[in-house]
Length: 207
Image: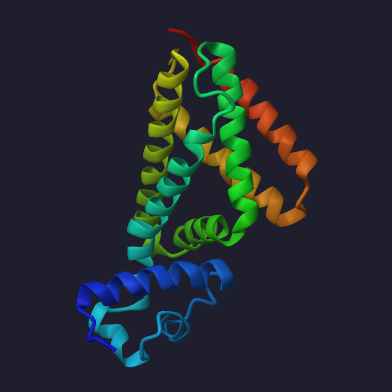
């Protein structure tokens, strides 16, 4: 096996940590388990990170926002009718985007579970609180980008700055995730999506 650079080790450990957190939770993401998942000896961990805390910071700073961004890029083309324009088209596109998110969630629920778990864990550990807040700020930025793209495609404009609305989108995806993890109730989640689209419709008008 070729010798890995420090940067390659860091990347492999970050991705492994994110997957282990998805499967076993933050508490279960020990350095031994993470190294095993990354197929590298435990002794090599400190060549890349000073501590497990430093690794968790790196996961929140890079892996989580990148993963959510990739998810957004995957669902944006899935609009009900990409050629349609206007307020009703925007409503249908938002519905389609949230339903597409739910489909991706069901295919791999651990990824979103990891994001929520990391946020809660960071909030409860002083040394990680600032990084946890930054993680959510990056998620809000990703959501704001999605709102801008969706409005541009539908030919509508937001009456409220997207920076004020993007936390609501992340709160909705978290709600969908927690509801699915707790109950797997498709009917309840369909209602959450319906109400979310109705609420957001109050903030866009024909451009």
